[in-house]
Image (cartoon, rainbow, N blue to C red; front, side, top):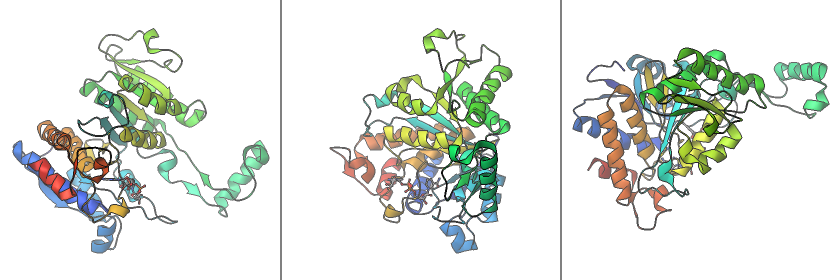
Length: 393
Ligand code: NAD
């Protein structure tokens, strides 16, 4: 990414445990940048609770404009209040600035407790479509005209009793577009090529949802077939029904295959070493990446970032964990490792690797926060602040 030598990086510490992990991660990222000869000018920006306090707005324009202008930013979690009338701030931010790919790497750090037999085999990256699907927020409650129209339509066209129960209904729409699917899959393939990965797996439920998830997979295969030479990217559209050994892949090419989403949750855990990069619609990606995160230590560890065209907004997979908020207990690793993704995208791989190594060394030496300590025998439980200090040390 073409950015200035001393970039300005907007940072939202976040709600709930964001107040703990935000400052802790910021210190570690500054220290890593400094140690590798880079210089960051942080710009605190506000959203969620801090947005309401400073601007009387959940998502102030200044925050959106700063992320838009400086193109590289990082955020902690934001709380979505439960109840009608609240749109998720995270979704709003991703949609407003068109961060269309949510990228979540899942790799094992030495010393982390894991339920898997061979967690070190896990090294996957999920590319989750970030703007469409049932998360687009197009839904209506009983009593609205829209629900009435759908009811009438279903009654006339399909025979109501055959497809829905009588009584109150909630209706949601699942938009999946060609543009949204293709740019997501393109991003995943480009990432695979840049990072020397072998395979991109399209994960969908197209056998049931033919015109949405089925189309996602067809459009994704079209990208693989039409936009790259065969010896670089090899599309395997029949891979659902064939075993991998039966497919003749040109040597060195990235294979683009497909798997059904429900089975994938199983394969991911039983045949971890077979998967590499995975690209999928929004809802599948949310579930699958949380489940993958659990295999390598849970949400306190799992990093993420939102990619757009020439811009990145790093953010951990986890939420604001209100129960632990403000107690200096939460694990800042996920936000620190999200910073690594941001550094990587900026071309500061040296700074990212340093953070990753330091975090791994800290955890494997037995210095951990509460979430990891409860599954380890000989570990010392430390606070968020102490953990960050140990990583910097
Ligand atoms: P959550 O991720 O906040 O918490 C789930 C569980 O994981 C809790 O037990 C929590 O204690 C634990 N956990 C999460 N992060 C941790 C960390 N860093 N260290 C140690 N333990 C950690 O999910 P939730 O409870 O479903 O959601 C709480 C709020 O967060 C909701 O308002 C939700 O909308 C919001 N949320 C925001 C984002 C985001 O900002 N991108 C993502 C998910 C949820």
